[in-house]
Amino acid sequence: MRNIFLFIRRHVNLLIFLLLQGFSIYMIVHYSRYHEAAFGHISNNITGRVNNQYNRVQKYFLLKRTNDSLVKANEALYNKLKIDFELPDTVSKTVIDSIRVDSLVKYRKFTYLSAKVVSNSISTQNNFIVLSRGKKGQLHEGMGVVDPGNSVVGIITEVTDDFAVVMSLLHKDSRLSGKLLKGGETGTLNWDGKVPNIITLTNIPKSAKVARGDTIITSGFSTTFPKGMMIGTVLEVLAEKSTSNYRIKFKTSTDFYNLQYVYAIDNRDQEAVNEILDKLKQQH
Amino acid sequence: MGNLIKYIFRFACFILFQVFVLDKIHLHQMVTPYLYFLFILWLPFKMNRTLLMLIAAIVGFSLDSFRHHPGFHTAACVLIAYIRPFLINLLIPQEGAETNYEEPSIRSMGGLLPYIIYTSVLALLHNAWLFFLEAWQFGDAWYFFIKTILSTAISLILVIITEMIFTRKQKFRTNTI
Image (cartoon, rainbow over all chains, first blue to last red; front, side, top):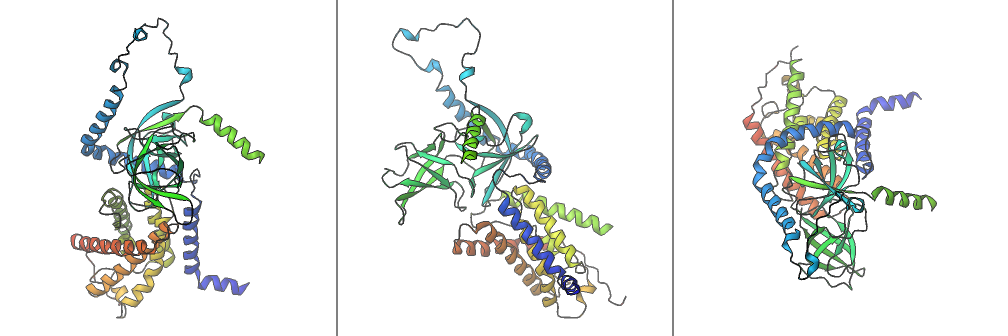
C-alpha cells in the first residue's frame, strides 16, 4: 500500500497528463451525433451569445451576396406561380373558393422555418454551423437544413432555447443518402475531410450510368429531407477495384463558404416514423 | 492579483482572436493557422506543472466549445503543457535563468535561437497531435505530414509577428532573494 502511494506521489504529473489525455479522447470518441454532453448546453449558450454579437457586425459585409441568393430563390419561386402557366382548355377558368378554409393544411408534410447563421466553420474535419433560432422557435433535433437555393446543408444535432447546432455535410460522421437523378441509384455521402465543397458518394453499383455533370439529389428515404432536394453535381467517377461499386466525387451545390440564411425543414411524420422504427428495433 | 487579471485578459484575447480572426481566414485546405497556444507558451516559468496542465486543458476546452466537438484542442494543449518544462530545462543552459525572469521570451531564454526552437517544437507537437486526432480515421500519411509542416510554419510566422507587435517588458529579477 505504501509503495502505491509513493508511486503516485512520484509520478503525479505523468498520471494527471494521462488522465487529461484520456478524458479528451473519451470526449472525442463518445461525442456522437445525438449525444449531448452535460455541459454542452451551457457552453453552447455562451458561445452562441458571443457568436451572435460577432455576427451582428459581420453580416453587413456579406449583404450583397445574401441579397443575390435571395433574389435567385425568389426568381425560382416566381417561375412556379400559377399565372405563369396558360392552360389550353376550359379547365383553366378560375373559380374563387368561397369557403375560407385552407384545404391543404391537413396534407402538409413539410414546413420551412428560416434561421440566421451565426457561426460557420469549414476549416476543420468536423464542421458545425450554429443557427440563432432554437427550441423557442420550434426547431428540434433531427431536422434537415437547406440553403436559400434549396440545396442540402446538414442536420440539426443539438438545440438549446435560443440556438441550434447543425452538423454540416462537411463532417466525417455525417451519413446522408444521395440519389442519382438520372438513374435513381442511391448511395451514401462521405466527406474525406480535405477540400470543402467536394464530397464522395459511395455504394453506387458499376451498372449505373454516371457522367460528369450529373445531378445528385436527396433520396427521400430518411425523414429529414423531402425527396429531390439538390445536393450536388458529379465531378469525377472512380471505379473501386475491390468491389463492384463506384466512388463518385461531386461538388456540393451549397456554397459552404458563405452561408447567411438557411431553412430548417420540419417533417410532421418524423415522430411517427421514428416511433415505428424504434418499436421494430426493440422487437429484434 | 495584477498578474491574474493580466493572464485572464490575455486568455480572452487569444481565444477571441483565434475564433473570430484566424478561423475565418481560409488560406488553403492544407493550412490551418493556429496562434492561441502561445498563451500556454507564455505562462510563467515557476508555475506548478499540475496547474500548468489544468490551465492548458481549460484553454483547449474553451476553443473546443466554439468548434462544437470537444476534446481535440484539449488533448493538444495538455500535451504541450506536459512537454514544456522538459524543453525549458533543455534549452536554458545557464543556472537560474528561469529565476531571473518571469516568463519565456526572446530575452529571458537567452537569444532568438532558443526561443525559436522552443516555439517551433511545441507548435509542431500541438499541430501534429491535433491533426492526428482529427484524421485518425482517414489514414493518409502524406496529407497529415504536409498539413502539419505547413501549419507549423504559419504558426511560427504568426508567433514572430506577435512578438514584434507586443513587446512584453521582462523585469530582471536578481536571484539573490
